[in-house]
Length: 171
Image 1 (cartoon, one colour):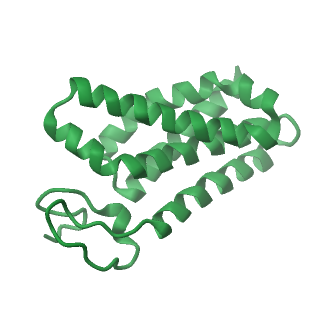
Image 2 (cartoon, one colour):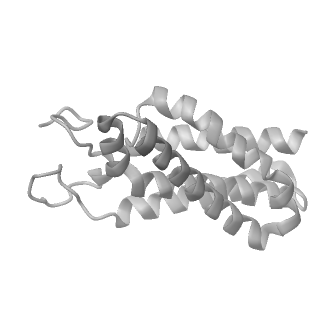
Image 3 (cartoon, helix red, strand yellow):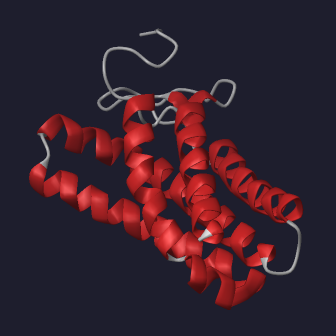
């Protein structure tokens, strides 16, 4: 039971922190949405353990995007047009963050079988953080819909949102 809890809390905490840092969702949305996404990761704990450190991150990195795609279609079919537009806008970052969170939790769970918890936690956190940072640094700058694309300034591409204002309050 301890393994399920550690996998759950790692995934949930990473998704909330990554959502706050990348600006793809409000903190409230990330908090409650992460609770359900982390449940899927926790349910895969035994699969992660059996797969070992070599294949567990691959399984996690596959499960995360599948979760995002399922939620994308839920919003498409049952959500409002504004929610669907936001889901379209943030789909790539959502997939990246979930893949990183699930892969990190999977690696942590798989390493926990062989190593003490601090080493396993560090390995999972390092993988998840590296995957998120690479996405944010490599992501091309996208302007708001209907606007020309401008230069990427200071890595802020992960914070842009459609609408009248960006996260920092500029227009």
